Every structure is written in structure tokens, then in C-alpha cells.
Amino acid sequence: MGKRRWKTLVMLRRLLICAIGAIALVALLSIHLRELTKLPSDTSYKLPTLDGANERSELDKLWKHPPNRDYVPCTEPSSSYTTPPESRGYLLVHANGGLNQMRAGICDMVAVARIINATLVIPELDKRSFWQDSSNFSDVFDEDYFINSLVNDVRIIKKLPKEMVTATRAVKHFRSWSGVDYYEQEIASLWTEYQVIRAAKSDSRLANNNLPPDIQKLRCRACYQALRFSPQIEAMGKLLVDRMKSKGHYIALHLRFEKDMLAFSGCTHDLTPEESEELKTIRENTTWWKVKDIDPLDQRAKGYCPLIPKEVGIFLSALSFPSNTPIYIAAGEIYGGETRMADLRTRYPILMNKEKLASVEELEPFINHASQMAALDYIVSVESDIFIPTYSGNMARAVEGHRRFLGHRKTISPDRQEIYFFPWKSLVRIFDKIERGTIKEGKNLSNRVIEIHKRRQGSPRKRKGPLTGTKGTDRFRSEEPFYVNPLPDCLCQKESPLYTTTNSSLFIK
Image (spheres, helix red, strand yellow):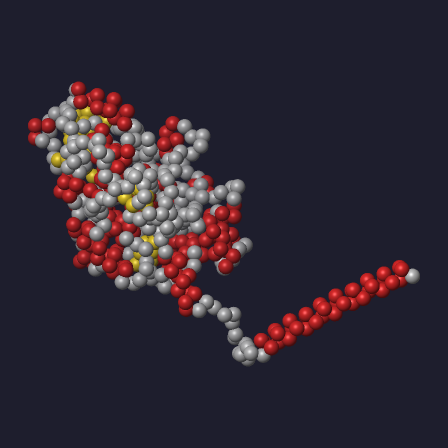
């Protein structure tokens, strides 16, 4: 009798549950049917899109700079810093490389001159590099301003005194990434025999880290305050910036898809066999490029290749930049010309450069001088709303560092390296899968690309040290260069006791 009663109760409970579920389902269906009757009969009805306010909010987020956490320039010397002591001799400098490599080298040589108590002679710019530029220092930089700005740091003169022209010189290749001890002991000891020391090269001759704070601050004063461009370049650069800003917020895209870079790096992705062979010939015939035999697939996987224009278009679309975004191409002649730019231009038709923003007459004074043309690109890039380098070369590093110094302006650095442990984070693999048709562009891809680059937008952080396990020269080479990120040496938080306001005369006006 008890068992029968229990079975009856169980059956009633199940019937009650089913009844409640049926009632809920009918109610839900009735609501949906009522809403469907309100839809327009037009079969082209689409899902609702963002309204104007939401769309504007999303665009504002795209252009917003990362929080700078109240970091400001702090380049004033310490209370123990003195005016230049009596000079022991003259330092001649051959600044080697392109514009931005020379800029970093010149600023380092200012610090070296201070360390060894030298009078710095205005450096000689490289005229024998790939670009064959005949520009002198005063053609590119404001020579008088440079000398006067550093008068309390280093004695600088325009020319070697006549009585020193025929003096025997110590010609030295300063050791790369050297510290104060090397210069104070090994280089300064040359003063006992010589009155003139010539630095055969200037690039990467000073350590990134572990230097006295006053030396690090001097490097920043030299780079971000004293070494401004010549008045002619400044004026033309400002004109280009104003013309870009008249189009609205703009991206400066350092599209380093140029013949010299591709030849040097051995990158051949998306090139024809004939183009690859041409670049190989250039590399083999350029005597000062040491590495000749390069595996292009390995280079690309390691992140040593610039993005191709087509990949840049995919990248910008995935980051949700609208097609009417004005983009300034900070580069020389793109290898492959307009044909190779076609995919990018289809997505983003407002592609501008120096030649499109200025007339032939306006550019005429600079046109045959690679360093001066690069200086114009530098100014427009530093002043852009967003800077995106497609390759981490000298210009990309210099502009990123300057933008950090000026308040951590937004710089989006594409993650080009193929990460074997995290393949879903690899742009290289993403682009290859799109090319093969195994993944499609859309919301999922966009979310993935945005997530990968959430922490690659120029927000404040300390300069990265060497990679774990590296030794010797490789250890220094793996460090983040000083001029890429001048924090903590030259940037302080306002509440920090090291913070003092400076009347910085930045060369970007």
C-alpha cells in the first residue's frame, strides 16, 4: 500500500513539472511572436547596428592614448653636477648609418665627451652609406642651438682648431655598449699621447644601463632637447603635420617595405623570384653588410621582417580602424610601387605621404637628401595621433622613445614574432591562415588581434633588460635600447621626489 502511494506521488510531481515547463514555453513563444509582428516586411531587414553615440564612443577609444600614470620628463642634473671641467683634448666623431642611427650615436658621443673631458667637434654625418646623402650636420640639425643648449654639459665647437688639423690622431673603434670604466680608463688614457681622438663609429658605443644617473639624463637632454632639426626642416615638418591634422585624427604608418631593408634582412615574403634575386644581389654587393646567406622563412618566423602592405591592411581592419582613417606613410619608395600598395589602398584609400601633401617646389630643397626627407617623416610620426611601425628598425625605435618622452603617446607595435608555445598569438600564422583560407576575417579574428596587442600600445613601463641566459655581446644586444624607452632614467612620476619641472625646449614645435 505504501509503495503504490509513493509511485502515485512521483508521477504527480513529474506531471506538475511538465505542466510548468509547458506554460513557460508557451509564454516565451507568445512574446517572440508578438515582437515578430512588429518587424518590417522587407526581407532585407538587418540586425541593429551601433547608434551614433556608441559608434563615436568606440572611435574615441581607438584614438585614446594609454594612461601615462603622471610620468613627466625629469632631465635636470643633480646638485653635484658641475659645469664642464677643463678639456683634455678634442673628440672627432664619424656618425654612421641612417638618420636615426646617427641621431642616437651623436647623443651618445655627447655623453662620452663629458666622461672623458673632451671638447666635442660637431660630428661628421655618414656620406658613404646605402643612401649616399651629402648632407652636413647643419643641413639636418640646428647647429647653433645644439651647441648653446649643451653649454653647461660639454664644450662643443664647429671645427677643429687650425693648429690641431695636422696633429696625430688616435683613431679608435670604441667598444660597443661600453660603460663609464671603459671610457675613463682605456679611452681617456689616450690623452697622455694624443690631443685628438677620432671615433670611427658612433652607433651603440655606450651601454643602455648601469650608467651614472647624470650621464643618462645628459643623453636625454641631448636627444630630446638639444638635437632639434634645422629651421627649414622644422618649418616643412610643421606644414606637413598641419595638413595631416586638417583631415582629422591620423595614423603615421612606418611602412618599412623598402628595397634597402628587404635586401639587408633577406625577407622575400610576397615577392616574385625576380625581385628576390635582385635583393640578394644587392646584399652580396654591399660590402659592409656582413650576413649574406639568409633563410627568409626563418627571418619571418622570428619577427625580423617588416609586415607587407597587404598584411598591414588586415591588421588595421582587425583593430577596427574605419576605412576613412587618414594614414601618413612614413617611408621612402615602397618596393613594388603602387601594385604592392593596391590591397592596402583598397581598404584605406586616404593614404598620404610627403609627395602628396606638399608640392614639388616645397619639397625641392630636401628631395635628393635621404636624411632630410627622413627627418620630415620623423616629425610627422612623432606628432601623429597613433604611430604604427611595421618593423622595429632605427626609426621605429627612435620615434617610439620620443613619443614616450612626450607623454606616452599611443604607439601600436605589431607582434610579428611567431611564438611556438602560443601559436594563437602569432600574427605571422594568422596572416598565413587567411592567405590559405583556413580562417576568415571578422569579429573573432578582430577580438584575437585586439587581445594580442592590448599591452603593446606604448603605456609606461621600465626599460627591458637582457634576455635570461644571454652572455657577452649577445646580452647587451638583447637589451631594450636606451632611446626606445627612457624610463626610469628620464621620466619620473609627479609625486616622486626626483621630479622637478623642466623648461624643455623640445625640437617638435
